Length: 137
Image (cartoon, rainbow, N blue to C red):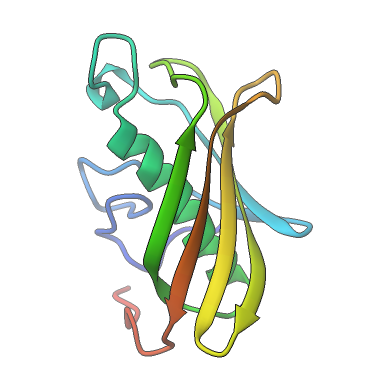
């Protein structure tokens, strides 16, 4: 697993006391992390808040870029919520890089349950900029 170089990142920062503490690794052509939401991540009772789900998906795509040597920011993000995520269930977050044209990268991500069902998925465009986010470690 690779830990963030950005200790206060909400999604992956180790030093963020209210963060998600995601830790991604490269697995062939995609990156992945495991996440178990708690009751503190829910919106409606027993349903993980859509903003948390969107953060998981966005972070997986950002790490897909990072593992391939790019850094960028989300320019456009489209999310499909297929089923609700439930607190206390373990999920696998996966992201992979699509095409890169100039300074624009297309990326994809999914949240899957332990039965390998896709729970949510996303597609995004990222603006590539190597000057973003100087290391803070």
